[in-house]
Image (cartoon, rainbow, N blue to C red):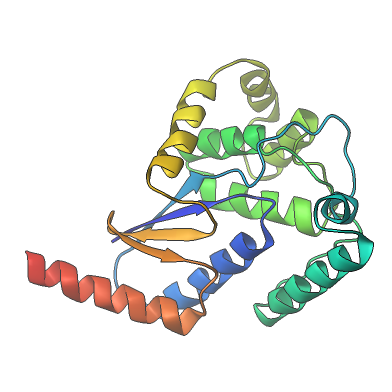
Length: 211
């Protein structure tokens, strides 16, 4: 079964959803291929790196609201075995990060690259909108950092990524994470592992009956 994950690497619920899916797959005995599909929560440029909490405060009514939001998601992440450090997280435009994921997929390094991007943003306080930072991360997961930097500095992959982002919109995806199972069954949100397991079993049953 193919599972497509529409997500953004600065989305905490996407990070949580990814790990909950992995927990579900650890108990699933079927064959699964996971593919990472791009989505941008906010495609606006980020001219200067700013702390995520400050960006949230500007967007959602002040520091108190921002802190309340991050406290809630940090608690949910802890329940999934993840640590989020919002005192370090930097707001970033993720277009180039998604280009890196596409490049990594072509070189068989997509899963570790996606995980490295989430950790960079949510744990290490790295600006994932920086091409220098992305090239360094690429080197850490076994890609050639110099080749990645040349790739990011070119326009290679930009049209393809724009088309992928447009496809997500055309599919009606407006929030992430969204999981598409077997190309036609959609699940929205960071569902608990048991829910994902039940969905996998149901899709398997439906697909078996359709053959």
